[in-house]
Length: 277
Image 1 (spheres, one colour):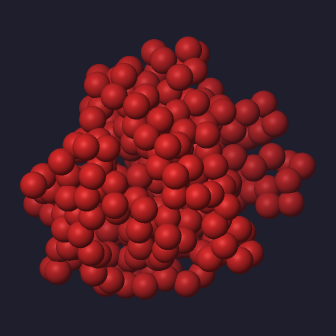
Image 2 (cartoon, one colour):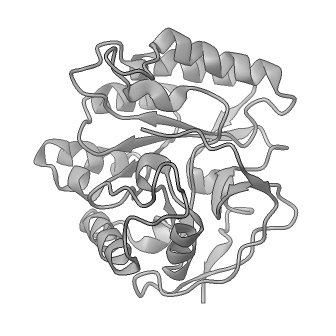
């Protein structure tokens, strides 16, 4: 459910924010010794000098891959990051899954409450929500996280719905003491939700090959990469990419990569650039 974003900025310095739902977080600047890829205020890639990378999953309506994904991560002893909407967290059918994810040490984060489209697909600077709508929707998402015992300081990275945003969304996120993130460009991993009837449909084989090809072409490979997948694609897609997760993780490790949680990828020395007052 993502659109490829061409324009990006490397090494931008973020300005301080405040009031992350009254949790006492305050924005700080990005660590100078790290090279981050940013686009419209969102971090899209971590330090490219490190072999660490993050596998992140999003979810809203579908989550049928949860058990398969959990089993694969547990077997390979890998921690991943999961960004769900408030609707996903409230769904009784996914409750045991989210509790298991938390209990097993994976990162749980916000993906908006109602999976809103924040800005126009063509005129990106044209907002489709007001600041009040944005804040209220995001607050509801974090309210669901609190029901799981996850506070905003432990879920400070926010992955926007559709992975589509602009400078205003990044600014509003920062005012809440949170940091906007998105996926790293270059592979077709985010197309794992597409169905054969979609014009942008990509098979699991094509998606997997795109990851291998990108890694081979780039001098920094997948260093610092944020690889986005979906926890479910619904009945319209039978070629489930998450079934290839064991193969993907084994390949990543064979290539020398260390899959980690998003906070472990982006935090400096275990301490985020978003810190308590």
